[in-house]
Image 1 (cartoon, rainbow, N blue to C red):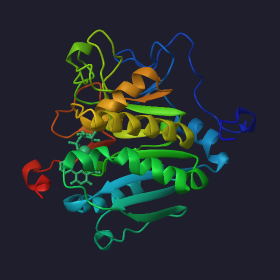
Image 2: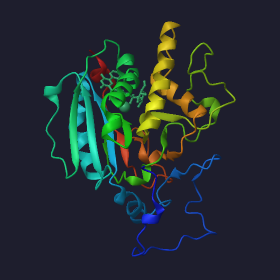
Image 3: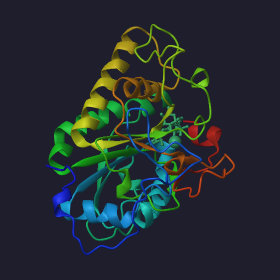
Image 4: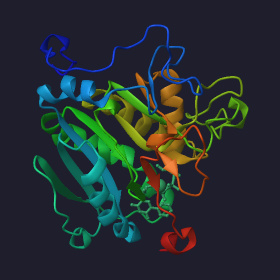
Length: 297
Ligand code: 2GW
Ligand code: MN
């Protein structure tokens, strides 16, 4: 049982009283119409969050794919994750790579471990990205169900810059894409062809969610990867590939299975964008990369 045990709360902790008539933020949405919190700076108190989650001795898994030239991103990802990602919690990194000899050794803190999982390289980059769903699903069923309570699946071409802590934990967690949080739904780059399993009609959609972060309880991430992988296979049989590969399928899934917690763009930023006033902290952000160079075979 991994639900938060409120009964274990220690009364020794002192913190400012929550104010019933005051919203922590007036400039951003902090709760969705289905009552899922949207995590922004100012909406949570880390000392309370940690006092709830720390006693549960949670095991948190993190999958990261680094295939071909993307092995160059592992070092920065891990070094900065050690500074900011769920520090103080038991974290297992699972690095999927075709070049296990290129995985650098990075000093890990206490209670933190790393497993390398050797996988083959797909010829098309779209497959490399899309097949993560299948590979995560298989690994969940082979071992992660036994090894972790929560699983977070992240892009590797990223760096942590600030706290990314236990406030992200919930049953099913999505990150709002930094490129589309101000846009009307008609401008979201959903798959618009009805022939695809990822199809979303123009008059539907809550947010545009990023493919670079999927999280939640292991059973919920299992259900998500299973459904998305099956949808990708059906599309393949029908000779159609969704506009943004697995990100399109993920967006269809989150429309039908609402996330229980949303991460604001603080939690998944893009360094090519200027920092905007509502973004108090950039916590995790894409590394600027030379697309042409890193993507050639
Ligand atoms: C990807 C695109 C083109 C050429 C190579 C690759 C590639 C990706 C690769 O050679 N090796 C590799 O390990 N990857 C993994 O796939 C790696 O973990 C990377 O972070 C992830 C997604 O590829 P990435 O980071 O180049 O895609 P983004 O950041 O431009 O894209 C978003 O859209 C993608 C779908 O097209 C995914 O949904 C991704 O999660 C999104 O962030
Ligand atoms: Mn990426």
